[in-house]
Amino acid sequence: MHSIKETLRKGLLMLALGIFTLGLLQAQKSQFRIKISPENPTMNVGDNLQLTATVIDSDGKEVDNSGLRYFSRSSRTVSVDEKGMLKAYKGGVVGIIVIRPDPEGNFARADVEVKVNFPDPKEVQFLSAPAMVYTGTQTNIKTRVLDESDLFRDDLKVSLESSNPAVASVDPFGNLIAHKKGKITLTASHANLKEKISVSVAKNPVAELEIANLVPEAKTGDVIPFTVIARDKGGKVLQDVPIHYSYQGRSNNPSYTAAGMVEQDGRFVAYIDGMYSVSANCGPVSVTRSINIVPRNVQTPIDFVGKGSVNDVHTSDLWVWEGVDGRDYAVTGTWGANGEAYFWDVTDPANIVGIDTVTVDARTVNDVKVSEDGKVCIISREGASNRKNGIVILDVTDPKNVKKHTEFNDGLTGGVHNLFIYKDHGWRN
Image 1 (cartoon, rainbow, N blue to C red):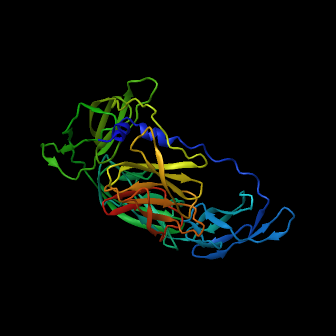
Image 2: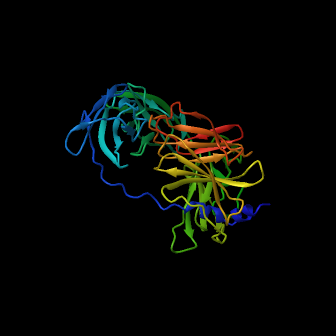
């Protein structure tokens, strides 16, 4: 085993490479200013609109506007290309940033807000529409509104109404509460749009609930699946019975509040050690069991061994791998800089050596990952001058001579933040 393996196991290299940058110097004020027209652009979904940016020097004269770069704060709402052409995809207000470097290396910047009008709503839909519920239970009813551009509108409120509240009523949070046997019509409405479904309320057959796989103790972070068995009065096991889960807890440390999470499929996890009680209920029938959560105590001392230095830009991400030659290497990205990814030989963590630099068209190399076989590296890009952000694939078979293999930018104009690589596939978000 290489010495780096022992170092990584203690967390040393993460510290060494994670804190080595000194940061960016504050930029001085540019001699230019940028004027954008129109000043208050308004668009409809699907529209294109040309922004015109004029660069003005300190004497108030227009100068060459080459070198302008355009950025959208939300390219999913409004995108902008390298020439300032806007494309609106959905309603909302989005900030557009225009920058231009000057000969002294400073940046002039202008901001404009683009308003995209929301299309009219056209349809109300039920996302969860139970045909039958049991007395004494409550079911959350999920709805949504579809607008004329076929987008779902989270900003529009839907009202729910029961045709017979004595049988089943709806609370302000969209829960359908079943009171007694019968049938109702449930109406979802927004403005003049309405959608209706029929719901039957049946007598609750559940007489007893049992937690079948009780775990007396677990560690913080453990996911504990609870299985609940429902029986009727005769002891017959019932299938497809709606179960609602909840929990309460008491932390062992008075400085912390007990914290955890329980999903409605019965999975429970606690984040703080203490005593927790998990409950399952179906209407008036419930069962509660307690579980002791102990600390995971995952910790190890960290010793500083060495560092690799980049003194003029921020570091964004780090990946360490064993190369095909058996030595240990690392790659680091950069943030808000000139699109560099740095490669290091870290076989001796006390003597970290920079061995290569790859520069791509970007301001930020957000994420870096290397394949398990140590041959392929993928890096993500944001802030490309031509708005063709995305991922770049590198050949790192020889980390001292990294070669650019290809890039993928389709549909990724807004940039890529996180990357994952596994076998022959890559994922991004």
